[in-house]
Length: 325
Image (cartoon, rainbow, N blue to C red; front, top):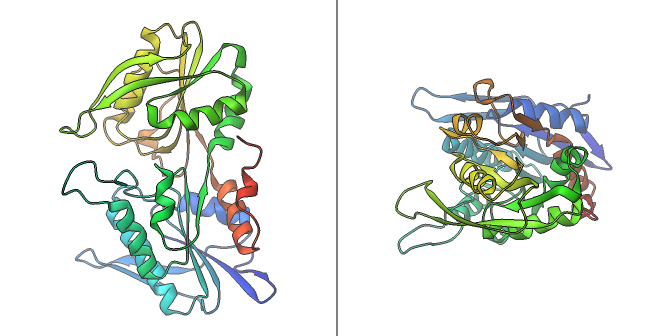
């Protein structure tokens, strides 16, 4: 692998923070470049130091960082990396956040609440980012929060390619765990040729991560159900949805989600549930202690690498998903 990929007078340089080095290495291998050597360390008081060990002047910089726990530390590190690139005269800076931190705080549900997803976009713009790239944003409106191009990538083709060989469309139903994911479920059903159902639920606004499941709408009795979502956090919502499907006669329930946040007690809930398989991607690191027998992890690195190549060559990121819906 070479350290820099060139196109005419333009140089692609790839940078990684410390939150998910395995994913960064996979993306670099797909791109056939090396991760640019970077000094990254913490001072005694927790402040972060960044210095690039090679010249970045005039480069097309791509900076990847997964916003995992401790999420505020890794967001701050990526912001500092962008600032360092800007001050070192990088020509164009693309921020790659496979999981967009604070994406669930995208609107005001009640008075005196922040819109932190917008604040995130503003901070990266102020730091010097020219472009954002993320996978399966919690809501599409976040694309409008950043004053510049946003590449919204979709993990659906990666997940579907794995599940297609396991499912019989004649006996499978794609299920949205709430009304907000019905449109995504319809895209899945169009690709697989299956019907759609959804679980009607109401979230308790006074207690974080508490969900009340009400009823199932759609054809699930005697069928294999695939629950799809953008993320699994504590696992409460998805496990209750699975229970509701079994109560309505489903013979098997699988789960497919992009972001494996897996905050406690998600792993225990999923291991002890009746869900037969949980399929996720590696947008976030999943340490060994959070893996379990029914978990399948698909690599998102080839998708990110193809998107980087399209951006670098002024190609079309949209072309990566044409024909998938």
